[in-house]
Image 1 (cartoon, one colour):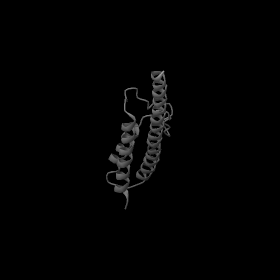
Image 2: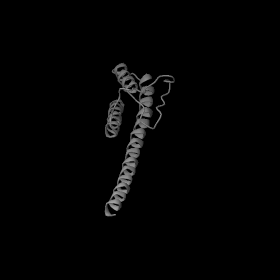
Image 3: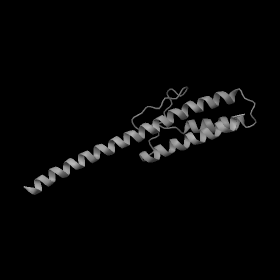
Image 4: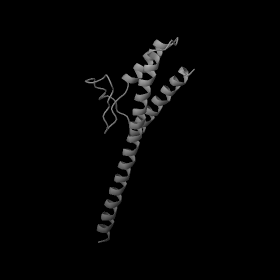
Length: 122
């Protein structure tokens, strides 16, 4: 009888453990999605400001921004919507990242875009 009680207790603990991990994963994915949305908005602002600028590295910066944009991928559970990319699939089936890696990629993307923004400030 004790082993049956222990088994039930073990199952309950495992279920709560899985649920907690799932909530943590959802929170991290949401954070990555929010970073991605901020990055997309920043890319658009940077591209718009560069198009009308007389900056000597304008073309290379526009190319960097375009390359970063092309590297975007859909975050599990979220849709990737890019203006002007309708019908273009950014869902690369070869991208196999852990959730922490997805978060790190989007944090690094945002960091790089903010560095470009800093370069363009007068």
